[in-house]
Image 1 (cartoon, rainbow, N blue to C red):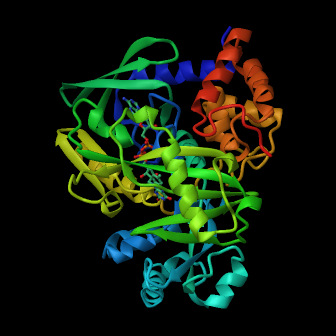
Image 2 (spheres, rainbow, N blue to C red):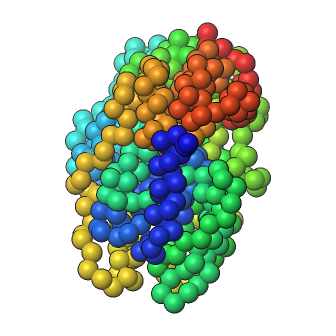
Length: 495
Ligand SMILES: Cc1cc2nc3c(=O)[nH]c(=O)nc-3n(C[C@H](O)[C@H](O)[C@H](O)COP(=O)(O)OP(=O)(O)OC[C@H]3O[C@@H](n4cnc5c(N)ncnc54)[C@H](O)[C@@H]3O)c2cc1C
């Protein structure tokens, strides 16, 4: 007899196959999740499939900031900054459990990076563009005040700083809660279900899928299809997206090794901005921005990436003497940027594009975590127009996002204290089928504690009970999970 989570998945697959969908969303990252939720709330019969876990791609590997993007000001992208600020405000209203306003200190150094006058002007403009989102406004900090707030910061050539506000979120949790809301509005959601191709039919498509769990093909019909596969978008048959992928990694360190206070710190390396972000008893340091040409699913943190971030951090925090052994964990992600082969990676546009290369098919690409709701609204507007029937207007800017995990605070920005119930909850109600689904994406536990933490075996045992794993499967799950750890490779313990 099947276990409840497996029975629930079978019911979803049956429902997907039973009657044609109005809309099939391919990809369960933040963009696909947003589209599915919006479409379901407007009354469409919608399904969403992901070939990996939900949020497996870029949407669990970002800097976790809801931000206007202060550096886009320097590039003159005021529209992007304004939209992102507005969306930050909307998310704060509809998902307050996932939006923690975060002050940033951006120091200016003589002869390096942005001069102080430019920073002061920049944050004033930032304030003007984001008046609506309700955080405090920016301020200027004299040199002494900066050093008092960030005692380890490099004092040499320091001119002063500005302080401004953005917000911290938990990217994968934002995806999962958006999916919970989509499911609650009637969407059918399945992870580990790969989209292979769509054959054109009268008013729609016959979509060929492959069930990665049961190792068998499936077919469903959908009147419209949205390709929201992020960095995979240009490899989907029928898609005409042209992407340029750039890789960004983040490191997690113990907060004692880089003792910042409640503010994040912005440091500059050439034209690039790097962030040192407080995360409970940890700090997140990121990110890099380099062209990537390898297989999408295999993007990893490489030693050179780690060295680059550590040496930049050591320059700005000279007493820290950070070394590879300080890195508790790391993640690497790919920015699905709209292609421009000429541009420098950090200068490429973060705007999104929605295109329809053939009738009833949309490619949605680019953009940011911060603007996902807007991308979804604009996409679903087009889908509804093409379907021609009357659908309800978009409600996602005012409807509260459900908080999927009520157990042990797992719905928030910090990992929960693990208990058996939270693991059972992830399996029974959050589509978790593998150990890494729980430890990496549902809870961020692996990033916070390092891959080899003692609780891995215990969590594997609880999941084995929920999902009926044999002892061999349980061992395989632990091995699979350890392979997902980017850095250090395995066996590393939290100090
Ligand atoms: C290093 C880095 C830092 C970032 N920091 C920020 C930030 O701080 N703030 C911000 O706003 N934005 C940030 N971004 C951008 C943001 O993370 C991305 O724009 C966003 O997550 C992209 O989401 P997505 O849904 O398009 O793609 P993904 O999250 O990659 O989702 C695509 C999904 O499609 C699935 N898929 C692929 N092929 C198939 C198939 N054949 N069938 C079914 N499913 C398939 C994948 O498994 C995946 O889950 C950052 C990006 C990077 C790389």
